[in-house]
Length: 301
Image (cartoon, rainbow, N blue to C red):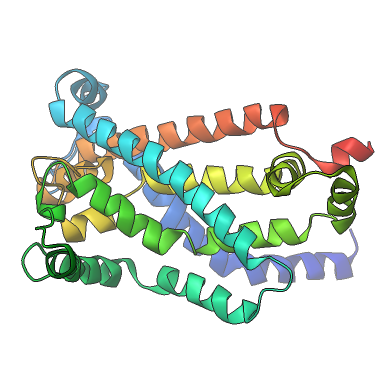
């Protein structure tokens, strides 16, 4: 290697050195440290002591809240991911229509709720859904003469209420913009050919739009599953996991264990369990994608 090439390589390494240092100290270091701590008893204020698989055994066979929080998180994912993807898709479909007046303005209106910080959105909906003086129950009483439910204070309504808040902030989010980008990449010639064949609107969506944007659907599905399994802030601010564990998600259980009970060893084990579940589900989605995702490059090949 010539001196000039060595100098260029050295300059390149110097440019990325701050990123490498930051990655080692703030990502890789804590990552491997938490893996080690997951095999220890570490009450934070004392030295960690090695316990092997005891933390994982306790999670699977002794911790009742572990399975309860896992089930709540699964319920959340099975509800919010399909509804969010379907809602974002139809919102993008609506905003992508030719001839829609003030299209840019409507896109801004749809996107604005997603810009609201999660804590601010949670506090806003706490006021809207307040049982006695909230906007929703006050409207139900004034217009229909009925008393609305307790919403976030009711074990049967708390989870649906959080789903509603999540959809309010999520339907017009970056997921909708990704769908918009995918829709704008569908060749107009396919729709023209469909019109010649006499297909209706729903047939166009089912036989042309969905297959052509299937890679976009896969991307939003993967991101949706990852995000739903890590749900934390919304429930933490609004319900704290209650009432009666109705919204006690896995992220809350991890937080309570690690930062309230200061059991960092068991908390690290919970974090690695969640990481493993997310990794496995992501790999499964990618491996099965070839069965339903259309890639233009494959067709050309």
